[in-house]
Amino acid sequence: MLQLAQLSKFRTESLAGLTVSLALVPEAVAFAFVVGVHPLVGLYAAFIVGFITSLTGGRPGMISGATGSLAVVMVSLVSENGVQYLFITVVLMGIIQMAVGALRLGNLIRMVPFPVMLGFVNGLAIVIFLAQLESFKVEGADGSKTWLPFADLAVMVGLIAVTMTVIYLTPRLSKRVPAALTGILVVSAAVILGGINTPTVGDLASISGGLPIFAVPDVPFNMETVRIILPFAFILAGIGLIESLLTLSLIDGLTETKGQKNRECMSQGLANVVTGFFGGMGGCAMIGQSMINIKSGARMRLSGILAALFLLLFILFASPLIERIPIAALVGVMFVVVIGTFSWSSLRIIRKVPLSDAMVMVLVSAVTVATDLAIAVVVGVIVSALVLAWNTARHIYVDAGIGTTLHRRVYNLHGQLCFASVSTFRELFDPASDPAEVIIDFANSRVWDHSGMEAIVDLAQRYHRAGTRVHLLNLSENCQRMLRKANVLAPPEDIEAHGQGNPSYRVTISDLGDAD
Image (cartoon, rainbow, N blue to C red; front, side):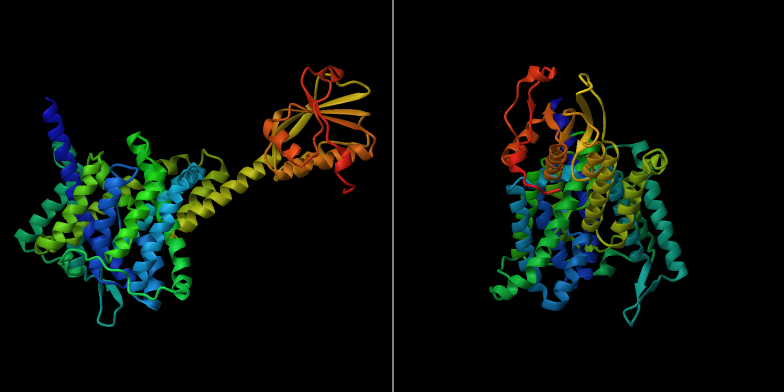
């Protein structure tokens, strides 16, 4: 019984890997054309990056390879300096990614808010959809692209529709074979046996080639080379890690498992270092192919490893057969991926969530489509942080505490004291009208940064000039540590003298100077 279960898992992983490998071919070729390099440069990257990350990465089931988000950055580097500079840049990109993993900075991805994640998913789905539209165009003699003739366009749309229909119907009949693979095989057989004239993979380029060969990039190793490649390497490393870690988080949610973010950073870096030395254009996680893999039932490393090996076999031995696969079949698969990737629930909840979150979702999606993923995520995180800071500033207040008398006033402070709320904090107190003794209770508040500490010091100065003695009650350990480090916090006083039952502190006015 156990052997049958293992055999079933192996079959699922193998078929999922074969499906993914077929979907990798046209995108790797297309991205190589975008950069302006030979198609094999993209295919070698898909093989090496996919193999190494599947073998050593932190997210079993995730597929990596050459991606469009990296390709658009590489264009100017290759056009101005040549392909050898691309290879050495990919090596440096990998070293930077490995350093991020070694420093355990991969966990910073948890700083990405959920609305940004939804915007990322929706924006990437739109980008994948728009990328498929290039398959409906034909390049003219002058290099410009126009839509296919109506008859050819109708045939292609029909084949795409058939592919999508087969993919949706297959699970109802049998789940033993991945639906995407079934769609590709059915449409390919119909085109080949029926002699249907439609664009195929071979119309893009020949994918025939040999094994990738190790070679040190042929560039001068001097400071001028560093000056050229360093900015590109940092940008590529950032985009690659952001896309990989966000895809990892997405698959975590789909499979209800937990990937290892820092291990994935190390693996992505190692893969890119190796790719650069073997003539590949580098890569990162691919959300489209990862979704195909997961939806095909793959959950282990085996599917990604086999996908990379199948791709290498296509290059070495099976290129004539793979080149006969119609583009329409692969476009149909990617359209199904788009539908499955887009978070349709976000359209239903957009009126139910806070307006700021809805705006962040739309903004991230729009920036992803207009520019690239890294900029979109950074913009989304910054806007979300500013919204949080604004809300924090609005929700800080005081109320009268127990022990308030004619000669003593107790303030209970509520809310977070940080850079965004210090102006509101200052307005909560009136030293000119308060009695000779004031106690500020921080039991329901926390001080988070230097701005908050300085706000406390400034308030103590104002009370000192008004002849009022200020005591600070229930300070958090973090705030105590900051104030002691600044040498402005007096030791705990006699707690019973204030009737509060907790240690109270004073700000040492003699160390503050006379600043307002």
